[in-house]
Image 1 (cartoon, one colour):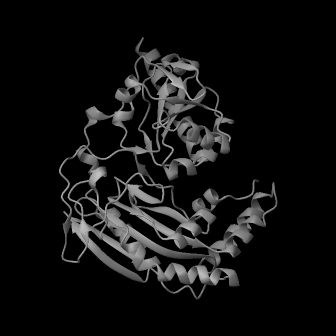
Image 2 (cartoon, one colour):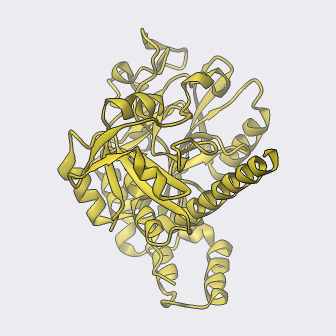
Amino acid sequence: MKRLTKQTLIGILAASICITAATGCASTGNKPYKNDHGYYLNSVDKADSLVDVSGDRFDSSADNGYYSKIAGVGINIKNKDVLNLIKKGSLLQVNSLGDSDTEYGFEYYYMTNAAYRLFNSIPKDAPDKEVEAVQKKYDANINKYTFPYVMTVRIPGGKDKKDADSITKRMKSKFSHIDEIGKIGSDHYYFAYNKDYQDLKLDKSEEKSLQNLVNNIQVLKKDICIFPVEKQDSRSKGNSIQSIGKFKTKALDGSDVTQKIFAENKITMINIWATYCGPCKAEMKDLGELYKSLPEGSGMISICSDGKEEPDLAKKILKKNNCDFKTLLPDDKLNKAVMNKVSAVPTTIFLDANGKVIGDPIVGGRSKDKYTKEIRKRLSMISAEGSASEVAK
């Protein structure tokens, strides 16, 4: 077994990597307004004119927080103390999911040094029983190892009552203080936080960090951005990716790539990402490992949306994470067939040998194991289609 990483710890917290949007909505005319609570809300999700709740401009592409078109919330963290803890790996960002696995917001957890020591005490190649014993110890003492810091969430109204109930229960069970930010349509938005960290098992060097976090709660609150979500049932099916036709583009390594690359395997996984996207970079290590152990009959490539503008940075990110798969730079045809129809990064799609999309896209990051399961699932879908075709003959 490998030494547990930050990404593994996020998984232990039972939350997925969050989604960062690639572009703003097609909507026009955002008109921010101040509500009865004294906060500024946005009338539409238009990336180049969003404001935070204090009325300042919000940069949806900034790599210092979170922004999700699906959740309807974002945050640009400006406080250096908080940013330093995120960079250090002590403050972990996870996203809030409902029962339907839809994203509704973000949470930040403080992971103590004691928690890291606990998991890193597991020897390499330790048996499963030993790993499970450490996991049980962590679960039994979770209040000593992790501190739920802040949460910003949209509680859905209307038809999403099941998700509303589960998210509300999650919020109330983890956070002592809950402030309502406002309401858009039938959706309610909240900022939740904790101040009491007395149960934590802390090193002396950590006590100042925790006090700084608590002192900066209201500062973080001002950096939140609230906007209406793009409802799932309102998205045009005609705007979804169905297939990829002929194209000829360049890869980051300078080689030419055409649609013939798909014919090399029964299925090809395409991960669409950007250099500015934190969640994209967070899953890169898993993608690099996945590429080296792909199921038989499958291939993998990526498309870097801003690779033409940031080729050196893209190469650096891939090299750092040992990602040896080919990364494409989108040309006009790929932009029209794929990039213009992707609402968020990272997004992953799966194509058969003919360039036809198999199954639904995956929006947001996943682990190596989850991607492997998705590949096998789509391979079985192709096999099922093939069997049906043979019967028809």
